[in-house]
Image 1 (cartoon, helix red, strand yellow):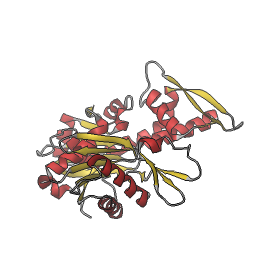
Image 2 (cartoon, helix red, strand yellow; image 1 turned 45 degrees about the vertical axis):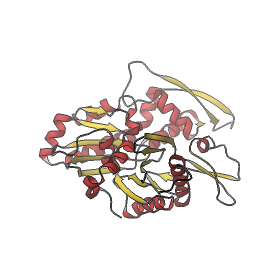
Image 3 (cartoon, helix red, strand yellow; image 1 turned 60 degrees about the horizontal axis):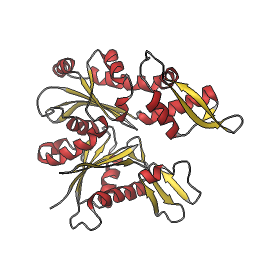
Image 4 (spheres, helix red, strand yellow; image 1 turned 90 degrees about the vertical axis):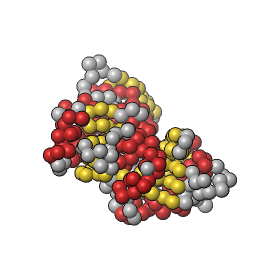
Length: 333
């Protein structure tokens, strides 16, 4: 009688999977509350529209930072809102919820996620490492003895793991993801063009002209912001070569963490990975040329999963369905 719900509680977006229905919700991890009493003004898409635009009486938060809870009370309110939205206000039975967390999360951070999920209305709350959820959602055959290399690049973190026999053999994570790329783009435009832009504008530049490798034909887009000298609004044209220069450092950090996992992989599993290649998931995996860059840097074939943004959410749902098999691989707090 209980609903089974899987949640990808991401730094940038929250995706919710309901057993039998699939992914039923995909909204930004943003919440707006009234400053005076802390009551909720808006959540998700509506709250995202308020970023950088809210009056003094409203505070707008991104309560998740680097994949973990940065603001506990507003995260609980955000989770409560999303759980009510997908399960109905008048549900008779509290749902069982599986939430993904970064592989490098501390016990304190993991405990905070579990407690917030229970406080938001879950009957039982389970935690699954993000690389394991990503592998399940990408339909990687992790139940066999072969080694599988999964690289999950989200908004706040990059998770890399070698998975075999339903468990993680080697893993590493770094708190570098899509948001760090956005920050690097905004910093570059400020430095080179004396133009101040917001997070959303930087993300749009990344989506429109971002690339991990030089392109045959340069892409261009216009970005608007505030002139750092005059204080007046203006726009500049940004080229893909500029974005490549801006994000080269965080991209190199992502490449290095993949290499560090490969260096610690047992030889038998390394042989499997060399033959099968790696699979990339997460929204940032869709950056132009990132799969080619990864393949060139590691000399291992790289494939982007189908629907990379949804893999983690789908994996949390599958993990609930196979709870008896995967129970020993879940995070205990």
